[in-house]
Length: 67
Image (tube, rainbow, N blue to C red):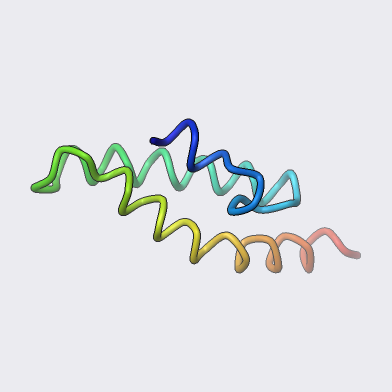
């Protein structure tokens, strides 16, 4: 799930810095939710959450490196 859906080019950020942060947050969230959570397959929740956060990361990194 994480390999195919987190790395999807349509749902992941376009900027390289945002992609790096995106991958770090997604991996950390997946491992934390798997360790603490009630469900075995929490990667689907992480995919949905990161799909919502990806455009925000792209905008933030774009504004940061634009200057």
